[in-house]
Length: 120
Length: 192
Image 1 (cartoon, rainbow over the protein chains, first blue to last red):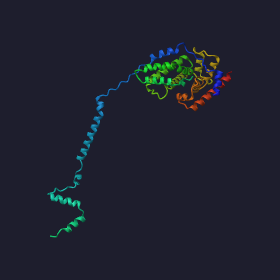
Image 2: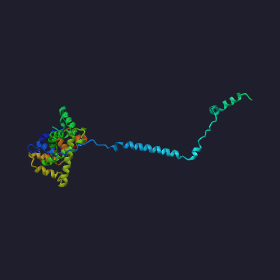
Image 3: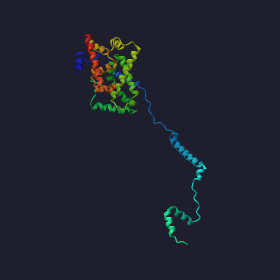
Image 4: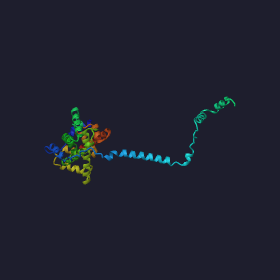
């Protein structure tokens, strides 16, 4: 920058400031003892309780959830139980076979089957 | 030569070594003594140009290193060590000047009376009349402009380096320097 160069030529770059003799050497010697000691950060000791706490909390929550579900299931109203379709206890294997057949065969197949049977 | 104009692999390697040692608690104090030895003079002259008096510059320099020591664990090498130290020195200088101004009356005809008094009375000022006149003209500038002018005029610091230290855009620094130089030129011409 021309303006800067012109100014430097006219007024120079020197400052009128001075320092006592050996100031900088002595400064280093003076400042170091003034620096406070730093606390050496030790590895924090984690107690047993702090280490197992999350596991215990998790186990407690799990237990509470199981207990709550059991409580809910046991206390269900009776009418819901009534809606459950009761399956008759079958007397024999033949009955069971008949029921199984009735459940798998549609109406048309049934009529067809009945019409093929000889009339007594 | 500018404070931050230290170039070359050697200087960078030295700085890298110092930063590595500063992060090791066992070597921290020893490394910091190297920092003090390496940067105290450069920081001193920057502070001195701002606070004018030698005793004040000495106090501010001490505060700068005490603050740097207190915060050295937070320095992670994102910026140059010199830039970081320079920033602390600038902040400490401005804080110091503001405290002084708050304690004394200030600003007579645009000049800073506290700093002007120190310029005329400090034991460690022995320049010629022209140098003193230039310093008086610089004292008429606002602190930020004075800072920018000192960095550019006396230390020939690059705008990019100034930008890092002062957290100001290069454009704004150029404008600030231009205004400062113009004002000083006018002051110097008027007084001749």
